[in-house]
Length: 436
Ligand SMILES: Nc1ncnc2c1ncn2[C@@H]1O[C@H](COP(=O)(O)OP(=O)(O)OP(=O)(O)O)[C@@H](O)[C@H]1O
Ligand code: SF4
Ligand SMILES: [Mg+2]
Figure (spheres, rainbow, N blue to C red):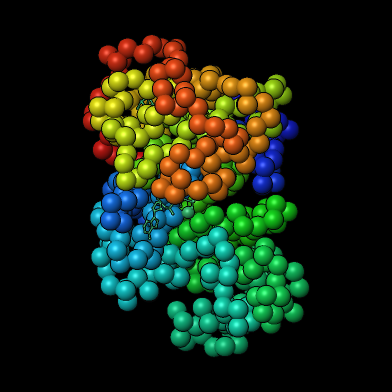
């Protein structure tokens, strides 16, 4: 485990193949002490028999960045769309979403329209979702400003629009303000969307895969634009991505989702270097490490996420988990505090057995295979493969055939050091209950 900061080692190309963002995670970033802006509690979303989000809770404070990561179909977008009140009518939503203490779930469209854009802004993966192709970009920013502030003159709004374009790094903004969206590159369009999102100084910005559709060379500039927007507005930023490198680069805390549930949450430092949920361990060890000198074998997570219509009994990760044992199928584990503090939570009955070990040692719980060497990060299901409901028997790693080991988790079982005796496992109910 690294305890000292060494920038020469800790910076690298983030998140595997498709992002070139320098990142450092060795220096712990303290959690924000700002006020809690958004508190999501026990959020549950179903579409008929598809149970897309299952009891997700988190809070985000002013000025902090919370990363949400998880495989395709794990419920990241549905969680955020529920917060924004943007889910279709057939979605059954329960739980609580409070913004500065006020409940948003169940409020009228009128109330939600006032919240959206002004209080909570959203940035989608495809900038053209948010931009109107027939209006000049400056006019669209002016419109956004004046919708929420009717007293603002056109002239003042245009001046502010210009300022916003400069903040997000549009070169020659004075001239580009009168361009149409199609005259901008994808990265510049996304920066315009960020300018629109920050136009009304929102308290919370939710960005759902904001850089995934972009060329590698512009991802870093868009991320920088988002951080500039956050600095300017002081907003809390919720950043949804499949790219762990991006999370490492910009977030203070991270929430890992699996099968519609939060399975680990904590500071980036804790989750990246002291993961306590085997799924997180698997995610981290599936990625190439550029910040260590020695050659580290990659360890793909074999198998696919479960169908949200037919979850396995107990822990939903159990069919893929090398630490699975019979007790895991008895009941779905709650999030429990780990490492003796209330900032790091993991949903695994064996989480405490992983305490005291760092990422490299924990990586040993996943068997390496002959396909591990040189496995590209985009072989991960995380990198945009179809979700569990679309392709129930799809292959996760490196295009290999589903392993018989996936169907027989016992074959992976490994001793993780401090014993596998179930008597060492504390009941989750004793520790669960607080807000992660
Ligand atoms: N409108 C809908 N009707 C029915 N099912 C839906 C709807 N929207 C999402 N789902 C299902 O909910 C589950 C979670 O979807 P979600 O879009 O939140 O995944 P995600 O984690 O954002 O994945 P990705 O990384 O691919 O964006 C999926 O199984 C998806 O098929
Ligand atoms: S050890 Fe058991 S509870 Fe923990 S992730 Fe594996 S299957 Fe789930
Ligand atoms: Mg999504």
